[in-house]
Length: 359
Ligand SMILES: Cc1cc2nc3c(=O)[nH]c(=O)nc-3n(C[C@H](O)[C@H](O)[C@H](O)COP(=O)(O)OP(=O)(O)OC[C@H]3O[C@@H](n4cnc5c(N)ncnc54)[C@H](O)[C@@H]3O)c2cc1C
Image 1 (cartoon, rainbow, N blue to C red):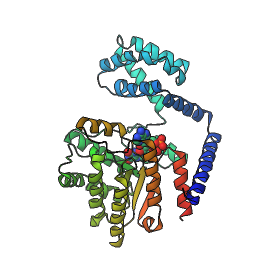
Image 2: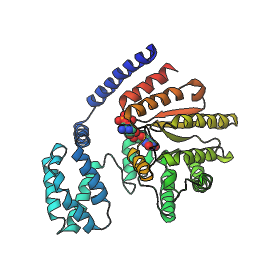
Image 3: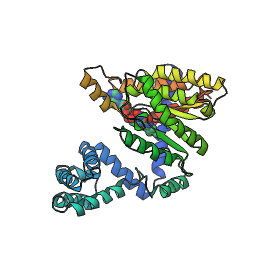
Image 4: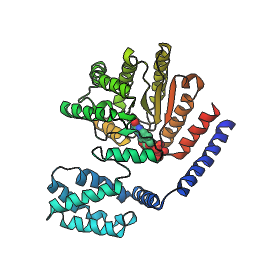
């Protein structure tokens, strides 16, 4: 490790500590309670299992009888719930699990309402309450990047409906930043026909990008699985080199858990340079570690392939720092704006200090 890297690392440790102190010092009692509950939930393996099961199996099913049966099956987690649910919620969960099969129409909606109350500060409802949620966050000094939750679409009807809902978000006067995914706007994307998939996705996204430009909304193309990497970069390039969109700044994500991210960063930098030379705007690249490790593993196992992401966390962390170091160079930042998205304060602090050092 060079002296400058060592000094920067030590400074990053100090800065991360100071951020944590500043955050906890400014917390309201309500925030302290919700942060404490969330920390207890994620540090308890049963807590995470309960949360995922509740959301996937009780909150999601359209049929209340299915949801009720699943709610009844949650009793084996109520013991663990002691670490993150208060006595009242624990009692409600036990009662709900016991009465759900007999009174599904009463118990399931009540359980869903309570869930919304508990996670309302984490996930906003895209329906009627969104305006108030955005206004409140703005008033507190936050800038929001909205992401319409949902998995990859399976059919064209759903793809059209998702695109229409994203467009409605983009066109809202109180929204200025929206994230989208290629797999949410076109179904059955083929990895054997990247060019065909690109044409299909671009045809869907172009009107959205034109609308976003018109409304002053920033669009970011999120990255999902390895198989979407080449497609997403190509879609991004085709959209951003379109003469009508040349002056629009837009973003894309790169995942450090993919060894291929370094080459992709170079490719995007080259696209950005060409765009700037043609009189266009900069692009933004958001660096993340990658959220779909489990899915990548399943995909690799099913096909008997080597998994696309690195196999260990240290390798991923090292690649993240490598990407940050590579991206934050004046010859690149003139064309590429760099975003660093991580919950890991040490890495955010490192990137922050490196950016300052490099001017
Ligand atoms: C604002 C924002 C936007 C984001 N956008 C995207 C996006 O578009 N696409 C996307 O994929 N993710 C996105 N993420 C999520 C991100 O990729 C990470 O999954 C998440 O932030 C956790 O990583 P971390 O750096 O915060 O935490 P850390 O705890 O430092 O790192 C956790 C990450 O390390 C990696 N990891 C952990 N264990 C292993 C292992 N055994 N082998 C290999 N790798 C391992 C995984 O990538 C895991 O997510 C976003 C996150 C934020 C905050």
